[in-house]
Amino acid sequence: QVQLVESGGGVVQPGRSLRLSCAASGFTFSRFAVHWVRQAPGKGLEWVALISSDGTNKYYTDSVKGRFTISRDNSKNTLYLQMNSLRTEDTAVYYCARTGEGAPDLPIDSWGQGTLVTVSS
Amino acid sequence: QSVLTQPPSVSGAPGQRVTISCTGSSSNIGAGYDVHWYQQFPGAAPKLLIYAAVNRPSGVPDRFSGSKSGTSASLAITGLQAEDEADYYCQTYDSSLGASVFGGGTQLTVL
Image (cartoon, rainbow over all chains, first blue to last red; front, side, top):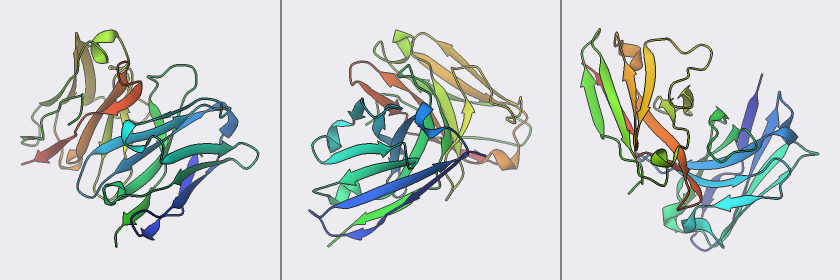
């Protein structure tokens, strides 16, 4: 079955960096686009970034542009989110989430369990 | 402030019908982009509930249904059950933002 397993979360000071990973299994990873979606404590879902199946196209929400980088290694079935210059408002559970390829409005049909990132001094 | 507006909360008694609205604009729902709904229980990841406004993934009870008109979409739950108590989110694409967007979420309480 489809599995997405995030890792790399933790407590980090403002201004520091962190890299999240998402290991995919149970499907052909290289055929699907993947999102990062986050959820601050007690808040709603917020879309963060999207990467196309081959990694050539990347999209970001405005608040993370220039600070976060989404990437993937299809040979390792792994998605990444490099987060630099972290701010307290980046504190959230980060989910990786699978979607289809070819249109920007396709649904997210599988989600990981999430990894918590806490930015605090 | 999300570009998709949902009521913060709705409630209903067991067996009743409730609806959750998702209001967008001409750059997202009104532009014809598909709307999807997700269900999330506390401490768990979201789960796809309705896709492309009206379609249910395999395993989702037919008590859940969706609709779309103009710049809005709705999720309806009939025969409300205690196990339906959760948060519900709509999602689509916004061409002005060039981004995927979620509604603010609606907390459903079964009285």
